[in-house]
Length: 107
Image (cartoon, rainbow, N blue to C red; front, side, top):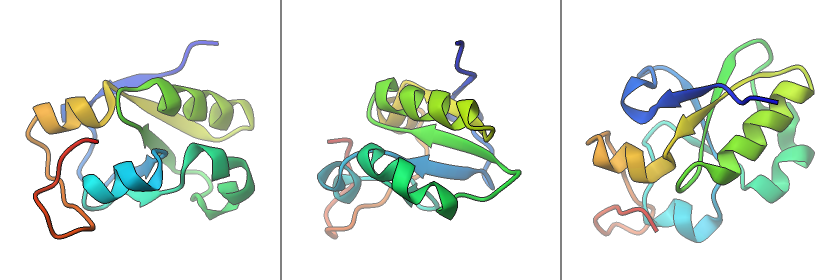
C-alpha cells in the first residue's frame, strides 16, 4: 500500500500535525502546533484525532510516520506522511520549539 507523502515545506500552516516520535525527541524540538502521540500509543489514542480531517504525520526521518499514516489510512482515516520528517522540517526552516527552554533541535 502506497502512503501519500508531502514535503515538509508544503505542509499547510493550519494542518493537523501528528508527531509520533518518542517523548525525548518531542521535548528536544517539535513544530509549535503539533500534537504528540508516540507511535506505540497511537492505536489506543486514535480517538483523540479529528474525524474527517486530514492528519499530517511526522517523525524524525519519515519511517515511523509512514507506518502511522499507513495504519490510519487502513482504518479509514485520511493521513499523509511528512517526507523526511522533522529533519526535513528543520532543514526547510519551519518553526520549532522545545519543551526544555533550550534551542530546539531534532533529536
